[in-house]
Structure formats: C-alpha cells, structure tokens
Length: 361
Ligand SMILES: *Cc1c(COP(=O)(O)O)cnc(C)c1O
Image (cartoon, rainbow, N blue to C red):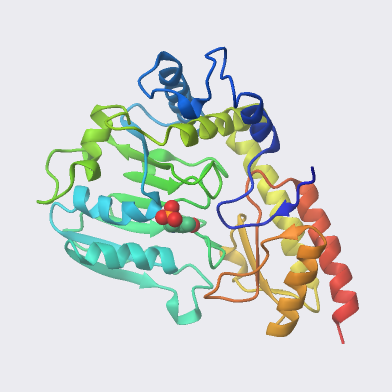
C-alpha cells in the first residue's frame, strides 16, 4: 500500500488514523457483528454514535446550548435553497459575493425573494475580500450571507462583516474546524463536510434556535424545514449514517490533537511554509492579496499555462495529487486541510523548488 499526498479541494484527505480505525471496525463495529453501514439508524449502537458525534463537535466548537447541530444531506448546495426557505420572513436577504459559491447561493435566493448584493470582489476575479466594515445592509434584511473561506479562489475573511445587527449566515465548507470560531456571532454556520471534516454526503448545520420556526416559505418541502430535523435530532428520516460515524471519528481525532486552537497553529504553520516559498519564488506566484489569504486553499500560477500543466503532471508522477487549479481559474491549487501533514507541504515545497530550478529561464 502506498498513499499519495492528496491536495484535493474536496472530497479531500482524511486523517490516516481515522481511516485505519474505520477499516478495523468495518466488519464488526464494537461487538455488534455488523458494519455501521448495515446498522439501523434507530439502534442503540447508532444512537450512541450520533449522540457522541454531536457532543464532540459541540465541545470542539464551544457551541452554546441555544444552537442546534443538524446532520443533514444534500450538500452545501441544498442549503442555498434551505436557508432562504426557512429564514426569508421579509423575503429580503443581503449577499457578499466573494466567489462562485456565494454567487450560487445568491442566485438560488433570488428564486425565493429579493436578494441584494452588498459587495463583490468579482471585479478582480475574486482575489480579495471586500471591505465589509460599513456595508449598506438592508433595513429589512432577514440575514446577511457570506462564504467565509473561498475554496476556489483561496481567500478568507479575517474579520467578519459588520452586519449592523442582522443575522449572519456563513458557508464554512472549506474552513470547518480549521480554527476556533465564536459561534455566537452567527445565526447559521454550515458546510458540506467533504472538504475538511469527513466523507461527502453529510452537511452540518449549526443554527441558533430562534431561527428554527414553523414559519417557512409556502411550498417548502418537509425535508427542507430545519424544524423537522431539529425536533427529530437529525433522525426524521435515515441520516447519512456512515458519513456521520466517520465525522465523529474525525472529531475525536481533533480532540486528541488538542482541539481547534492547536489545529489553527498547525494550519498556519503549514500555510506559512507554502506562502513564504511563493513570496520569494521567481517562477510561482500566489494569486490572492496577502491580507486575505486562506490557510486552507492556496492557489498559485507560473503565468504560463503550458508550464502549469507540466508542473501538475510532474507533481502527480512524484506523488503529489490533485494540484490542478479549479477549471474556472486555471493554474494550481494546493488544498492543505487539517489532515494534510506538515511533511506533505514541506515535500511539496521541495518539489516546487526543484521544478523552479529546472524550468526558470
Ligand atoms: C464545495 C463547496 C460547496 C458545494 O458543496 P456541495 O456539498 O458539493 O454542495 C459550497 N460551498 C463551498 C465553500 C464549497 O467549498
């Protein structure tokens, strides 16, 4: 068996310890004589799995009691509809557009009400985060929506926008559990877990209780009501049971590592190794303004598409997978999520240095 260094933006690298544990438990989970995949979601064994997962994420993120944690399906993309269906009481929502994911959420919200764009960084291909200190927040906005870490473009909000008292809703798919957050600053924090937490198929929604009401937009499907999932502790219907089990293992792994402040230090250290190299390289350049750089997704280019392609190809042959940039951006992108070891980044930089020597004219 040999594992590569997987820099995929998602689905992405998971901790090896977690994968090994899951492999050990594949045929017989904890003396039940069956795999978690084969288990009733109403069984005692599964109840303990999901309850422990919730308890552990609450502890990791220091989630206050007046927030629910929901384990849902449909990916982050389903939330683009579920959020307006549940929150648009006045049918008004404000958006800050910092990339494709925020834009998609905005477009979806336009189906349900009046969606306003407060600010956008599209003028410079989303290479920065707009100044959000004094935005023209709508008087009657039900919420202000952001995508906190922009997976494709490699930007991250370093300070949250001033929403002037309005509820903040954040898509944190690609920075989930990468650092401590103050949950109380948000109405909803949500993400698909396949970037930094677990296998595709689970969407975690952390939502303040007062936002969970019967009063959804007319026509909202039952499965799209937060209340039904909150009232049934994420067991209204069959949840993505195996995926939640793996997330639970990742939570345990994070706790054993020392929690989110330790993860933040580790992630900052990894990102610094890569950015420091990029900042002095004569071949490669980072594409994002320094102040807004993500510590999870690091896009870079050589400025020559053929050379970019050559780099991706040679990197792959050397065991560095999925470094090709998003199809809409080109160039390269290294996603260096929680489970990417520092050694992977160090070795990538060594490889980049060698490539630079060989290819710099
Ligand atoms: C990947 C991603 C999405 C889309 O997630 P799906 O689970 O595929 O719907 C949305 N937002 C962000 C920030 C992402 O990185």
